[in-house]
Length: 194
Image 1 (tube, rainbow, N blue to C red):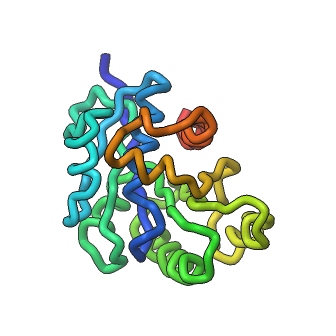
Image 2 (cartoon, rainbow, N blue to C red):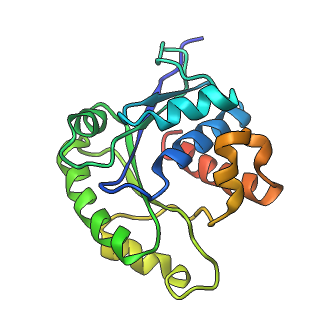
């Protein structure tokens, strides 16, 4: 069966926001929810590729028309041709940001790149990652999203050791709460393109 494939670019202009971690874990969550998913690793560091080779949770596959979703992991550089080309061919952009001042400032710059290269009318959202509950910044993610300049997903991802362990142990490293966060985010992302 041939699907209308939805391409989603995961981006941020700085490293350390958890872009690759979320790309792999969301691809796995989409697969667990029954979607055929491809993950494209365009970051020269190749971390997503290595992760998938180690854990075998999902396939690292080039899109072939049978994938419902294609997640594209991009380099953490706004001037990167790989990032710009990924945005230009995507149906959606997900800006991965933690609620920290450094990510806030870089995310504002990333919004300008998204607006320049993502085709008009296609959705772009912030997915907040590494959120520490009960902190001042975590209490008002909507205000942070407004400062960044994009709407945020309702779902956000907490700061958990399990997500780091997943790079070596795969999906089985995640507890039920971690999986639920990822599946909630995946469902919200999928709803952007019914």
